Length: 588
Image (cartoon, rainbow, N blue to C red):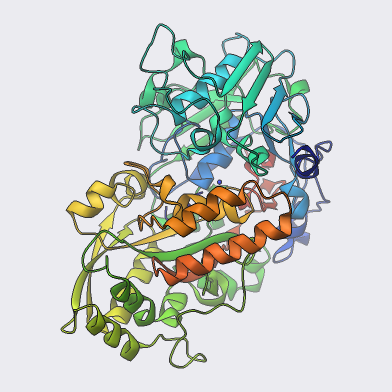
């Protein structure tokens, strides 16, 4: 799952799907009694009060409001206001927030003995905003449009395409508009309330895929391809108030056809929800503190300027949460752009980076911890002892420029090399980190030219487009990744597996296509024992680090600000930010 600042056998499955009743999780108390980091473990300012307008803002434009065409974590969280999915995560802070619970589904899926077939039954009485019924074929169609064919929506993951059986020859729903699902055998819909998913082989993480927004229903006759984002047909408690166009903001109002009896997940407390786009980060931070905004939509916390200020203010600090959110911000090195197609040149970047300077640029301890591996600490398989490219002085952690110069000479670039570095212009921490990278690599003779792009196009049109990367020789790009779900496969497969490389919306920015790593990804999904799977993830991390395609920088910690008028605020580890479905406001 793209980080917003950079912008995821039957017995084993049953263990994952602890489908408990959906509770609010935790106690609250008056805002005056709140403390620093309180929202990590409990609900802050608990309330059932309805009404008012919940006000969001974001520095860029929303990537896409289409739940089938997005990979930013904040959209996965926010789109649940108007797009229900088969399953979701429980509404609770802490580890309870990792539990998978039904949303549109009636209960847990029925899984075949061999783990290759999942049968899901929908609840009765589900409706869209226009009063028409939500049927199983709408979910099958939604998955088809986002995963299959040359015109498939580019921005989201392609887990369904990778794992559904009898689908390799399916050309997608836009090939035959008279019969858009003809030839799509990976999902069967024997009746309006039943979906049968047929997999190529056992895939023990599949329940997590059923959580993703691509399972939000879309009727075929309402689909407009990439233009569907203008006014998504709501299946949730809110609907669009008019059409959305990027840059003009978004307003959601209540959907009278939504039945709360079918949906214990969403509190639906506000009467209205607004989003402002293109607001400077410093302005967002100040307006949060002034009570003029309720939530920073990106979910990655205060910018560098305000972060340092409020952490020194004991009164303001009690309104903060500083969780380890599972994101890793790193530098990608493309294997197709010369001279970084040579291993030694990529290794030179690893040694040349001044990780201490990058860490400080990201906000120091409050911004996260210096990284040495690809997997962040919260993901099983992380090896805390691994450090393949150690600094000359581990205490200072400033890299080893002399070693980097030696490696540049080994790859035929003894006189130094030039490299372009892509970064998102509207992310202050990224821009500061880019400057630290530029200075650090410059010590070893790697001359870095920083190229800035808008966040809403960066992951699709620039860094996420291999053609753009090659044509513009964008050897280096700052990127950030959160786990699509909290396993090694859910974290690494889309950024390291050669089979995940896409023409647009590509997240394997380095274009790593290593036969040994690809084979391990193919094998690990069928390993029943969780401990053995985690050992494989550790091995994949090590092998990819040896290929020097990802330069670790910072295991991110967000500094989240919750205004006193924000109710039911808590950090959910599955959404990696506040759980937007729980929030309300005690303001007007």
